[in-house]
Amino acid sequence: MSSRPAVVDFWFDPVCPYSWTASRWLHEVERRISLDLRFHVMSLYLLNEHRTDVAPGYRANIEATRGPSRVMAAVGARCGDEVLPAFYAAFGAELFDRWRYHTPMELRHAIEIALLLTELPPDLALAFDDPEADVELRRSHDAGVAPVGGDAGTPTTHIDGVAFFGPVLNSIPRGEDAVRVFEGARLLAGYPEFFELKRTRQRPPVFT
Image (cartoon, rainbow, N blue to C red):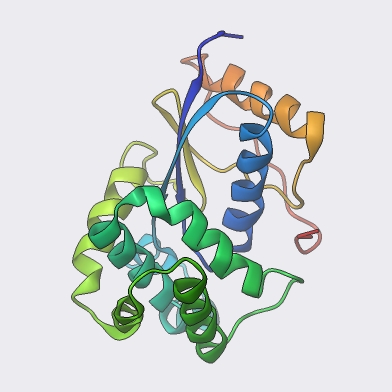
């Protein structure tokens, strides 16, 4: 592996459980090896906007829960993407104690708590229902998704400039396991002819 710090750009939808597990994994890695780690927001709603094979129930859910990604985009635009890791951590800590679908009311409450804990302007919560926030959200989303192509999903991770959908982690690797998983991902990203590994998920995610 290279001795230089890896440059990792991580795109997440804040309501996606697999974005949460991958983000906690990257923080585990960051505590043990040198990373240039940057967070950016994407959107499950925008990701599926023009797809014709989306189940009606799933589409209804991502439309009802699109508010947090709007707020994250507004936070990044006004305060800088460098505040996103702390804001996202505070938001996710309110939600990802166990696997469940979240209601819009729960999501609004988590946004308000996260803004309070991170001392960010409380009026940023207004972006939750503001379609104008989609302009900045789409800009960030497209920057993360375009290099992956049509198979993009959440999360999307760029390692040393190479973009992939994933990793999809059913639980959070800890300690040296976190580093080993990262080194494997970086090794695969460094081989220009590698494109895909995949298998079917068989159980819900675990957040502990």
